[in-house]
Image (cartoon, rainbow, N blue to C red; front, side, top):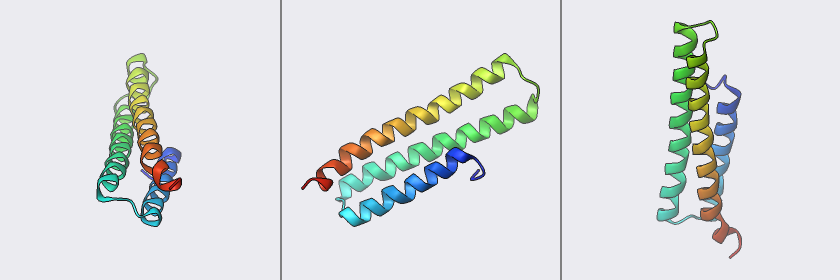
Length: 98
């Protein structure tokens, strides 16, 4: 899965978020938000990769239904990533400007 370019980006941002959480001394409550968002993005990425692999294996030729399914799965990853970014900003902001 880490052969996927987006998964590498998620990995880098995961390391960044965890490092910032440690350096800024996040509270337990804030750690829960950060860990939940990291998990959400990784779950979405794993499901997206699984769906794309399955689709490519079962139907290698281009088909409209397959294209739509793959686009929707990728959209789910995007929604999860945007939600994680917003929660991350809301969580880290007070620590950065204390």
